[in-house]
Length: 217
Image (cartoon, rainbow, N blue to C red):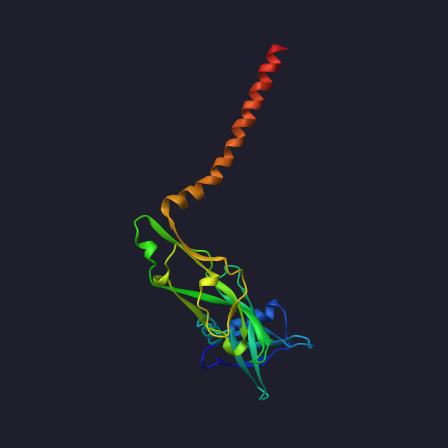
């Protein structure tokens, strides 16, 4: 987690529905729901610009300050995007304690060039842009940096990642994060599904055999 948790001013909202949510966003506010164990979700709004800024900079945990002076530490649970998929229109938050163990998705940041990629005709394929890790809320990293210059083979698995202290990968340790592959192999893999399209020719041949049988009759 970042050294300083973003602090946002939260306002409770009584009016719900799509029309009111649009008015909130037009006024620079982001609709949100706050979930607390054993209680019904509370509808709130957050300053859109500050919230989006925090999310883009890898914040998973936020501190909310309410108008009545109350404070709450929350975890970002889910984001809802607009129909174009490029803007956040709603956010779900959950109350957490800093020592609570949670599972979150962390972005992978790749740096350096693997030795195998220096050979002509090879490309780097990213199979996982992010991974799920289990850790305490206070230990949630903003991102996980991966130095590919230390990669000795042609594949990097989850088990080979150097995770931040206190973080444990949730997925299978043998799952591939990224791999170096020749362009020729990549092209062959893409062309393989096309081979299945040869089946209609077999159907045509069957039709021709049926026509010959009708002529003999």
